[in-house]
Length: 198
Image 1 (tube, rainbow, N blue to C red):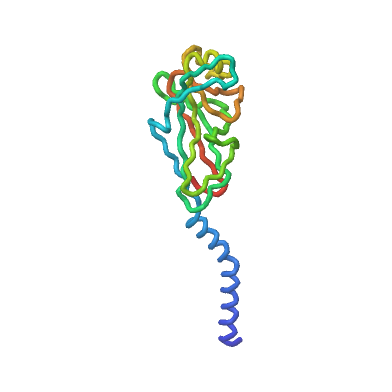
Image 2 (image 1 turned 90 degrees about the vertical axis):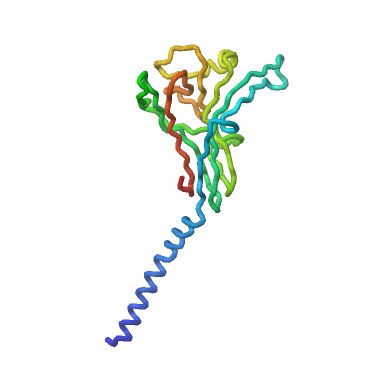
C-alpha cells in the first residue's frame, strides 16, 4: 500500500467522522447560543404582592366587594428563542415546628400552579416576555368564611379559624392541604420547559 493510499483512507475516515458528529455539535451550539433563558423574579412589593378586590358578578342580586392580597412571582425569558411548554409545579411543602425546624410534609403530590391570565397549564414564553404565576392569596375574613371555607383543606395539625393563605393550585387533592394557617412554611416550586434550562 502506497503512502498516498493511506492518506486517502485516513481522509475518508475523518470526513465520515465529521459527517456523523457535526450535526450533533451544531445542535449543541444552537442550544447554547440560542436557547431560551428563563429567570424568576420576586419581591415583597407590588406588582408581586399586591392588594386588589373580589367583586361579585354584575348580574348578582347584591354587589359585594372584598379585599384580597395576591402573591406571585414573575418569569422572564431572556433568551433568543421561545421557551415552549412551560409549567410551574409545587413539588414539596415543609412545615416549620415551634423551634422553626422545617418538617417535610409526607406524601405530598406535585401539583401545577396557575399562570396569570392563561387558561392552560402549559404556556409558551416569547423572548423578552414577562409573565406572572400565582403562588396564593389571602382573602378578607368575611370572604373566607362565606365563600372559600368549604374548599379549605387544612394542614392536619391546624385547628384555628383564622385567615389562611390559599394556594392557587390547578387541581385540589383532598389528601393534602390547599391552604396554610398562621405559621412558617417552605414551598418548593419547580419551573420546567420543553427546551429551556432554568
